[in-house]
View 1 (tube, rainbow, N blue to C red):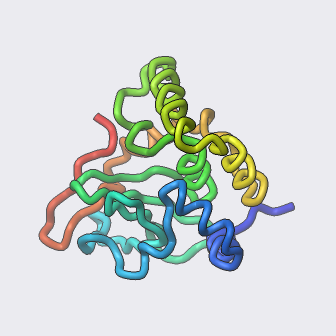
View 2: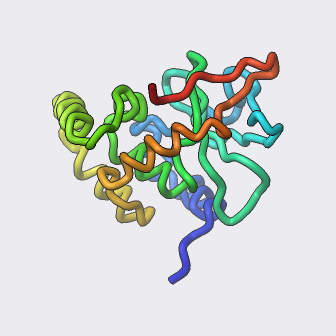
Length: 181
């Protein structure tokens, strides 16, 4: 079975209300795209960015470049941080669903991954205190959308975030700070 195109995956989420509602709980809210990002952004090479969702902190999830089967996903935070998070929407959703937050996952260097995985497990335990169904909800979304487990994607997230070609640039010419340090 061929992999679903980003456009079809996005349409599935829009068409199945429970998917959109549950993803909003994971801080990937399609409704936040209605008004666009907090500030207009583009890529340094002039490439277009199309907002598809937002998070509660005012950040934006954006598809990069011209429409294609699969497009890179860029995050533009409301505090001037951003960058590439995944090569396609399915991978971006796997990260959003499978991690406590992108901010937690990029808050420390990857190294060998052990310290970061320990930190993320701690953050997940904190979330489970208020959301005991967290693991079940993750599994439901993974099954419905065909998402991989996020743990195997951490190194890729850090490598993607280091790709400076995908740093958002504001209309004033301000280049966003990378997600990772």
